[in-house]
Image 1 (cartoon, rainbow, N blue to C red):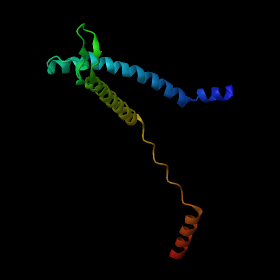
Image 2: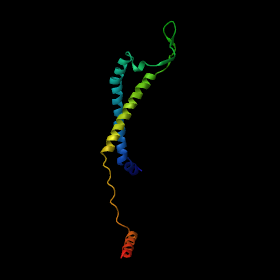
Image 3: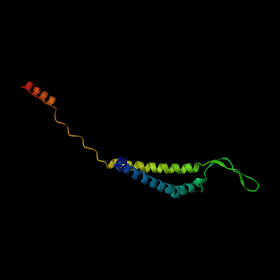
Image 4: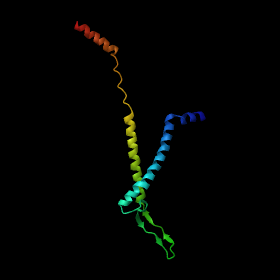
Length: 134
């Protein structure tokens, strides 16, 4: 069983998938940092300094008692976080599209197979045709 598992684990395609998965996870973190550190501030500047994480629709506001303790928690839809993740997705999808496009462009088109010579049947028919011409 261990021998079969080793053969399975050491297949080239499985290792390629594992490497791609690790690189994808790292790339996801890079894109998140880019979105939060560079894209969000620019959009915040254009939208009057609003932080993405603060964007939400409050369904039920927080209720506090006289002492200031929260008696009813706020119920809100945090659409700003969803917007941030959507921007991350669009960036990752675009970069992946460009990578796949570049890989496909680098692949050489396979040359068309050389035409096969005439089959035995075709040779016989050509001989008959040539004999009829005489």
